[in-house]
Every structure is written in C-alpha cells, then in structure tokens.
Figure 1 (tube, rainbow, N blue to C red):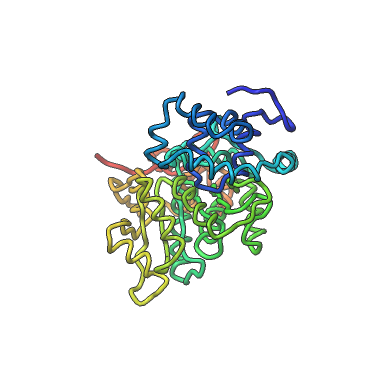
Figure 2: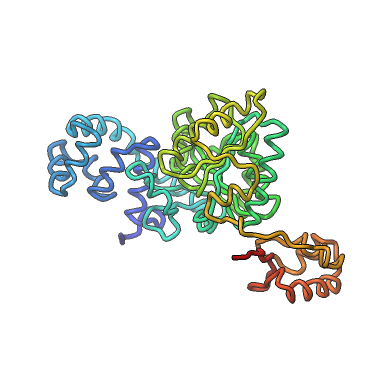
Length: 395
C-alpha cells in the first residue's frame, strides 16, 4: 500500500497503524474487524468523522456485515461503544511524539512491511495494528523458526537449569527464543540465548520506552545488540495486568511451539499456554516434582493432555517439526583429541575458524588440522566462511 510520506518520513498508512495501536487495547477484535473491512486509514477516518449510520452502511457495502454480526452481535451498539472508547484516545500530538522517538532509537513495523511476522496473522482480527521495536530489526526474520519459553517468575534451581539447557540447545539448532522479559524463567531463557550468541526477542506489555521490569535494563540492552524488543502498544503506554495477559497471546503466536518450564497452578504462563491452544500451536511442558508448587501448573497441563511432556531439547524440536529422532549416535572414539575438541566447539550455527579456535582452546594450525579431518569424514560443513556441525542421519 502506498501513501505520501508524513510525520518524519512515515507514510500515512504507517501513521494510521500507529494511531490504532494507541487508541485500542491489545486484543481488540472489533478494531481489527474495522481495519480489515474498511482499510486501516479509512477505518480511522470513519471513527473520527463519520456518524454511526455512515459507518454501518460502509460495512454493509463491503459485504462483511453478517460476519461482524455473527461475532459481535448488534453492530450499532458495538459501534457506539467503540466510538466512545476510541475518540478520546485519538491524540495526534502523542502519536507524533511516539514516531519522533523512533528517529532516535527504534522502528515501527506494520502489516504491509516485508518483515512483519506472518505468524501474527493467526490472531485474526485480534492481531496488532503495528509493532513498535528497539534493537536489531532484522531479528524479526528469525521468528519464522522460534520457540516461546515461559514460566514462573520465582524459578527454582531445577527450573533455571532446565531453561538454560533447553534454550542453549534450541539456539544451536537454529531457533530464536521468544519470551516476555520478566524475572524468572523469561529472563533465564533470554540470557541463555544470548550466552550462546543466539537471537532472542522480548515482547513487552507496555511501550518500548517503558521497559518492564526495571531490574532487567542491562539484559534488555544486551538483547538489543543482536535481538529485539517489541510491543504492540505505542510509546508511553503503561504495562497493566490486562496488557500482560494480552501480551501473552503474541508470545504464543510468535513461537512454533510454546514451552512452559515451571508454572504454579495460577501462573500467567498457563494463560500463555491457553493462547497457544486457541491458536492450534503445540504446547510443551517440563515435568516437575509432584511436591513442588512451582510445577503444579506444568504437571496439570501434562496430565490433562493439554501439553506434550518433553524431557530433552530433541523432544521439543520434534514438536516444532525439526525432528532428529532419525539421528544415530556416532562413535567419537575414532577421532583424535584435536578433532574431538574442535567438534565440541562447533554447533549447528555457522561460526568462523577464529571463534571455534577460541572456544576449543586450539591454535589456528591445530584447528586447521582438525577441521581438515572433520570435513573429510562429513562431521562438519562450511557455509559463507563459517563452519557448522552436520547432523548424522539415516533412512
């Protein structure tokens, strides 16, 4: 969709999307229905300038009145209530301030952009009007292959260990890690991905200028170096209980699978799992001790059949369609010491020779000797100057 640039280089369409992100609460399906039926810019103009009868006739003309009635009931009443909610929030000065923030640090992604996460389309009319982001915008491209990891804010030692192991291995398999940036399992998942130089995306429940929790500012700064922090809410928006619950639907939508590591019986992570269930996304859960209240929710998800029990990263990868159950163990006893050390330092993510030598504690000459043998026997391969481990499979 084309439009004349406005507001610091942003098109009229982008400004309209940004405005919708300010006037609607997350998950507002009626706003999404109006945008889908009338178009983003036209729907905004209609809410601002047209009478209820004029909007009703426009919906009728577009032939989507019946599906609106099926979903919302009496459209005239819903239109009246929505106008009452939306109009006081149309603050162009506030939108201008939000967009000017992007000129200093940040970006806006709208559904017409090539890097818009297509998985959000599964949210239907409840999909965001826009995503505000900071950090590495190119990280959005990795969301086509991502795992959402959530869990208790009061993670146990067991939960911390499991999260570290799973997140690191999933990154090595080429998955991005999506979570909510909170204390506990969320933060551990983000840090584990960063530790192995993977991509991680944090989804906020408030504006990108109000990152929460404040105690994670250093982690957020690290995420922004290689990953991204995103929000469907315009800058200045406060994180509220409702917005946290609705934020969880984005976490569920962005992952190929949602993994619940630890969760109490009333944990917000169960809410994320319910969103994933509604979207038809696979849900996985780590079993915990029956005596631990921190695992009561995960154990119940497994017992009820809502979540698939997983005990290894391979189990989880299989749910995401990346099964290595056909992998056969290889006998490394035939490898020399240099080859073993080099192989231990190589993952499924390509790395340079210098990086591998540093990880393995080898000289460049020792690494060259080891890599020559590993390439010859097919244990590693090379791509764009980087080396990566080759999975050993059989039919």
